[in-house]
Structure formats: structure tokens, C-alpha cells
Amino acid sequence: MKDERPLAPWQWPEPHWRRIVERVRAGRPLRPASWPGGARCAVALSFDSDHETNELREGGESIGRLSQGQYGNRQGVPRILEILARSGVKASFFVPAVTALLYPDEQRRVVAEGHEVAIHGWIHERNSELPLEAERDLQMRSADTLEKITGRRPVGIRTPSWDFSPATLAITRDMGLLYDSSLMADVDCYELLMDGRPTGVVELPVEWIRDDAVYFNMNRFAALRPYTPPAGVFDIFRREFDAAYREGGLFQLTMHPHITGYRSRVWILEELIGHMRSREGVWFATHAEIAAYAKAHAA
Ligand SMILES: [Zn+2]
Figure 1 (tube, rainbow, N blue to C red):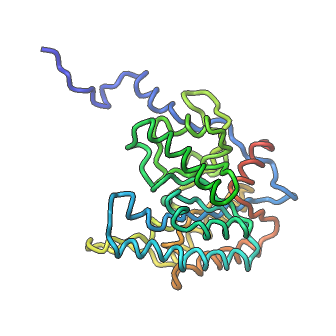
Figure 2: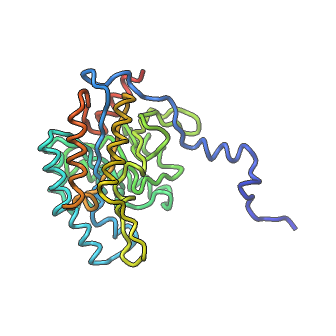
Figure 3: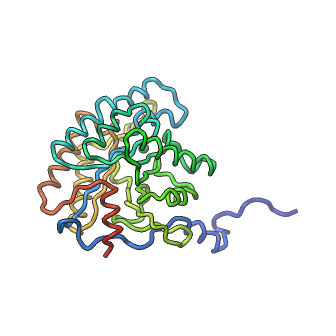
């Protein structure tokens, strides 16, 4: 009788594992020789306004956890916007469509203050768990929803939880988006390849190291409290920036209004901006501006 079990990874023939690796890959580096105005370093700050979708995405209905999401709107985003305005820094906000529908005024304020609003899924669903047609439909409806609310068509996407299905990149390319900011193959921008072929889509790479959530997330009912002290998080982010500055590259950071927007944490953002502002030749820009510049000026 024939053995129907799928092959174990150690039994996979070479074409099989090569095909998996080649689905989405980093291609041509898009690192300009210099940044606008002769700046030596680019800074891309981003805020993922997940708010209540953090609970809703898992089918959760916890009123307590939903209230933590609402904190993101009532306290987190305003505190962040005030710091950005005080320091004259532009940033990008990645917003699930459900967040935008719950808080349209928040999105309009973000855009009115000169920041970018970009795609972050419908309800923070995981792309790799969706049927293909649902993924395409949600990504397109998310773009339409953000455009309707803010008056601007989004040009970039950060997939919820940075989760990619084998179809995600094709949808992003077909929608004509300028950039994705969910993958981790470099510290500088690069062009995404799909099955070995260039797509024209710029990747503006993230990393969990440069994400507040991994240091501060807490599960009330687990014994572990995996907090990293805020000063420790600041030190990691500052070192990431200092090295980017030395190398003349890109410093990208991801924060969440419902995670960083607390009195004991939000200083990280303000002191980090102060530290970066004390250096000459730092270009603060939105993800869209940096992706467009990197694409047009790749060395
Ligand atoms: Zn998110």
C-alpha cells in the first residue's frame, strides 16, 4: 500500500524547498547614496493603530480588553500626535479599516497634521489563514475605506501581525501599491521579488527588535510578566538608530498607541526624537516618502 503521508522537510526534494523560499524574496537593494538635502540617515517612525481590533481579530468580546483598545484612541494617539507636532516630525500610521470606521475623526486628524495613513488589514485578520478571494477582497476594501475616510488613497501596506500568505504580494502588486512594510530581509529598503521576478514593490523593512509590542505585551492570566524596562527598550531603539546613522542608512520603528501611549512609556518616543534631532543630517519622513525616494534614487 502506498504511503500517503506528506514528505517530512528533511525528505523534500531540492525544487520543493527552493520553490517555498523563492515565493517572496529580497531583490535589488534600494539604498540611496544620500538622502534628500544631503541627509545621511532616514528615519521612518510608524504607529500601528490596532486599538479594539487586537481583541476582535481573535473573535474576542472581552470588555476589559476592548477598553484597552479604546485607550489607544482616547490617550495613545493624542499623546503621540502632540509629541510629533512639538518636534515637527512626520510619521506613518497603519490603521485597520475597522479602527478607521470606529474612529474616523482620529484618522482625519492624523492626515490633517501631515502624517500618512496606510493599510493594516480589515480587522487585523491573519492573511495566511484567509481564503485567497477573502484576502484580496479585504485588502481592497481596506484601501477603499481609508480613502473614503481620509480623502487620500493609501499607497502602502503593513500586513496585520506582519503575516504574509503566498498571495499577499501579488495582491499588493496588483493594487499598484508603492510599498510594503511587513518583512525583514534587510535594514534598508529593497525591491520585492515574487517567484524570482521583480515586482516593483518597495519593501521598507520592519523587525520585532524595533517594535514596542514584543517588550511590553502582557497576558493577565499567564504567570510570566515579560516586561522589558522602558529604559531598556529606549536603549535598544537608540542603538538601532545610532548604528543606522553611522552606516548612513534607514532607521525604521514600529510603535502602538495602546502600548506606548502610557505615562511611563511615551517618553521613549520623545527622548528618542530628541536624541535623533541632536544629530545633523537626519531626514524624518513618512514611509511613503522614504519608499518613493529609495525607489527613485537607488545607488
Ligand atoms: Zn497591528
